[in-house]
Length: 147
Image 1 (cartoon, rainbow, N blue to C red):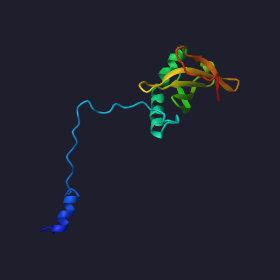
Image 2: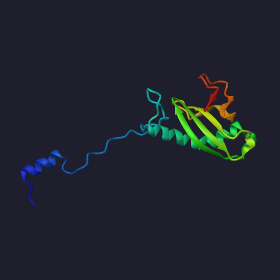
Image 3: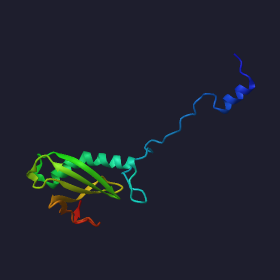
């Protein structure tokens, strides 16, 4: 079968149905995954929020054990996660009430190069979550209570 000059020219312009050669990749030049970062307004994209949520879900049990070593047997149910700039607030309920409070909020600080770090814990008392504990080396402001 012969191609007319017009069909041949169209095929050549379109690449002739052939794929472009693969781009060379330098070993080790693959991009490192970045931590979920807020945009200029301090908001996370939905993809970044999902990434951060996954990090939180994977590390909450460990953080809770570190905060409450006497209650390491508890499991924790996440009720809500709120993101504000480089902070995330995780509302969680322990499997038993022997921790002393019905619910908690873990305040996590996210840096560009690190996973979230628990910088404060709020405990439900008197209808609101009040500051229960915080780290000494966090230089950002922490609210005294969270709703």
